[in-house]
Length: 127
Image (cartoon, rainbow, N blue to C red; front, side, top):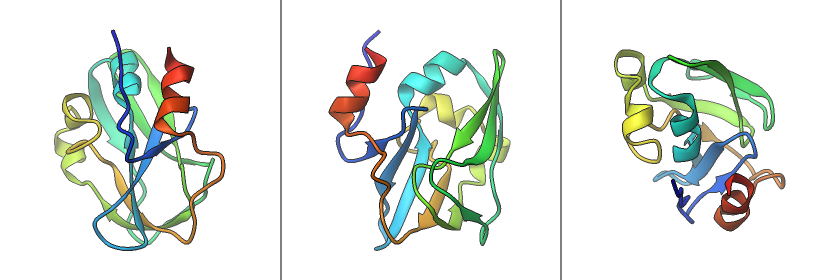
């Protein structure tokens, strides 16, 4: 199966993505199509609360599927300004639309991490 990551975002080697959100200075975070496919059916997502601070490269939550429990890592540092609460009742959105409706957080951030991969670099990693 071929996974083509969108080019409008940057990626962590651990399969999280960061994309500019609609509001300036905000970044939306989620996991990739490759990651959700590897996990299988997502049954639970644990995310930080609005107002909490996350650090690039550090764990910010947990995702659980029928196959595994995995930590989620922050692609950027900043304050959580929005949480996709729909995922608490419908975690399968991560499987159905990981780059869209399955987003997890919006973070107010100062700068993007230098450790993030381009879509092309990420695609090479998962090939």
